[in-house]
Length: 490
Image (cartoon, rainbow, N blue to C red; front, side, top):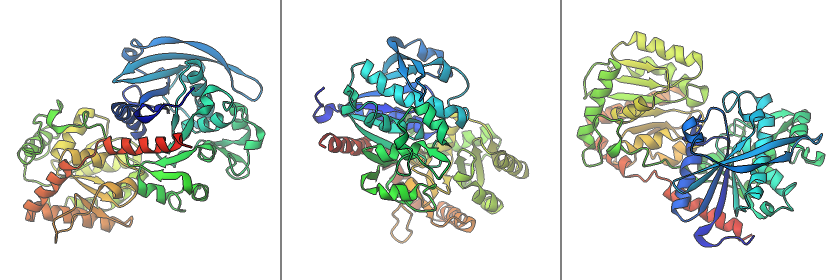
């Protein structure tokens, strides 16, 4: 099939989750928003996903049956059913791979031993489905370890087929998760040739195989979700054991920062807010939302009180050990703190104890609550994101969109999107700290609080700059399109 030219680039996205069908983290947001942005730029986009049992029936009712076939998979010649269900939303075609043996039980991620076979099957079935549908993409854009075998299959078993003409991109959203398992386990379930199980492709030490490593080797291009993270993962500290491998392949590695869906996150049209607002009335209306938030959570009602929010998975990655170490100092002058999230029981318990110790000043909401997250973004004055590492981060982008000032550690996408406030010039759009230390986090909070109380004109300037910042997918989509065009020319 002839390659498409210009903006008519055909792109097949392959990934394990996508909002609104199934989402556990930022990957689901990217798989939703980037295809929509590419369609607006004139691309043809298909998103290929597993048909998990947990997908809402309301979406399943909108799907149409496209057909089925049997596919060879395992080393011993095992064949598996592949069904294809399809729906179209906002110009994006979504193809769902059906196989009840793999996808009809549990949550998307159930345990690595079970997930390895599941995503071996999915990575291969995605390409087989494209051939079955007679839709040959210019680019197959794969995401994280769950789709990392797709570039390998593309260059090996599918090379002589129509889809074999496509180029591949593999995006690293979080390198911590790599699909590591026993060598024989991956050999059996992938059905890939034994010669690929060497140190250049799959071997991870003498006794393990690494799916992500193989995908990084075979992909035509590798991207991460921020420029800084692309550099960080080539170092021992951030490389999660793959830093040397990534350095070897650095010529094809680049970073493109994520955006957010500015229709979903729009303070002026947010039905979940008691007082929607835009840049022209943010200063007055944020105070109304803060009062509503204080009332909802039983905090002392005072719109002039400095309030920090924390919306996060409660895990070590998110820098919560730093927050816990200085929490008493953060709130010692009456600063209010609101925490929303679930995760490690150690952190859930710690924040509950903080709420108990500071009744009326601290609220620990150990849950997932979409409407409350919107209200925190709108009502808080600042948002804490003190991560140990952060490939991109979306919360700081949403906060800026809502005029809430980010306080972040200078790592990954946080460093790329938040410029430190400089009091002498008055520029910058947030407060930052560099080394991973609790005292430096506290210093950043204190600096923000000082500007909030004592230099309100400068604080208001930060709010307005944040709301003016383009955090949409428009620029990022254009960078991906340029990458796709480069690959098509090879």
